[in-house]
Length: 115
Image (cartoon, rainbow, N blue to C red; front, side, top):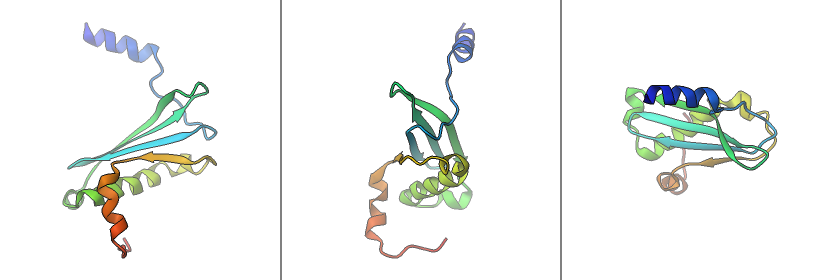
């Protein structure tokens, strides 16, 4: 019964939409121990937020050893590389939501590595 209900919901309702370069774009990122996740969303004409694309990437063995703020920065880099073809088309500001507490150490470090 639940499977039939879910199948019906997924076929009747638009869950994901196509990217529109003329709409406000939101990126939501999060990093966990072994995976980075991100959702690219956009507002429609009624200012309702809709998910466009979901991105998830398993971390390599070496990346799993990174400190949490480095993992947070890593997902931001991965997301912009992965979605560059879409994001470069928009002339509107792109808002990004992430756990900023983990990134506060970045502001304290004056010297960044050249990775």
